[in-house]
Image 1 (cartoon, rainbow, N blue to C red):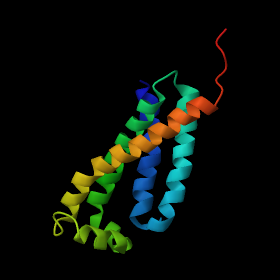
Image 2: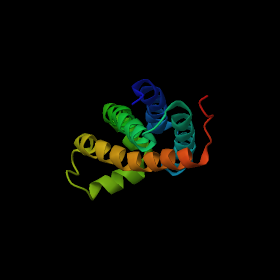
Image 3: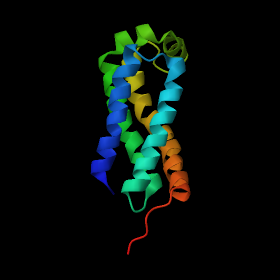
Image 4: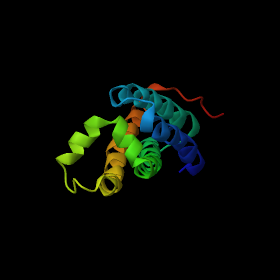
Length: 134
């Protein structure tokens, strides 16, 4: 496992953690994440010799740490800028404890998106030609 690469790619998640607090609207987040996932998948394939799915999965798990931490710490600002999230969390467990909800759901979202990024990386490994070793 290339832990240095995993950490470096997770910095996209750190940037998005702060960007989603007040800059990036929830409806536009998908576009940013799609671009990030494509870049990460490409870089995983170019810099790793195998375990592409696992590398992508781990990147998203580390991303979830950054994102959950930032959203919990700045939860008032985050929720003020994401009314859809407020209404959604009102129908979930612990509706009066949004920070605890974020702490519980963050790793679950990280795992779910880890599967998606893992598939992106695996598919990229099938599409991107690596130079043959001489």
